[in-house]
Length: 181
Image (cartoon, rainbow, N blue to C red):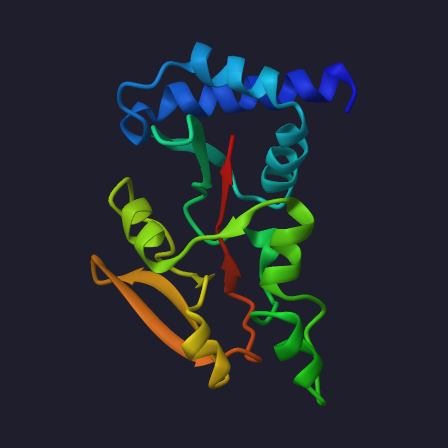
């Protein structure tokens, strides 16, 4: 990545960081920026998150690993990641009207992971997300083995976790990612 787009992304991330200090109390931008400088390979993932409408921001710090946690903080599920089923197996199982993509492959291509249920609930403590959309969540293997997948949203000021067939897809369902830097 050339320095100009790299700097533009860093400026965007810093501005978002400073605008939403409630998402990362006690964390200083200078420390995050130093960590990004030490791990420039993560910039590509952050750019992919940004380009697909995720509006990534720092939501925490993992003391055990020493990594900052970036998460998609767009108000609604990122527009550039909607209209896909849960995983490749589900995508290939669609004989009629298969979706163009799936959440797990997109996340892997971006170098991020899907939020699990606990992480999604933690994110919802930082704001109101997915009030008109929904987001696929990392599904426990026992549920996926039976053909299902889980997703979450916020309605009526309450966070709901639901299930659907993994092969389903909707124009208002995408996924939120997490990146450890």
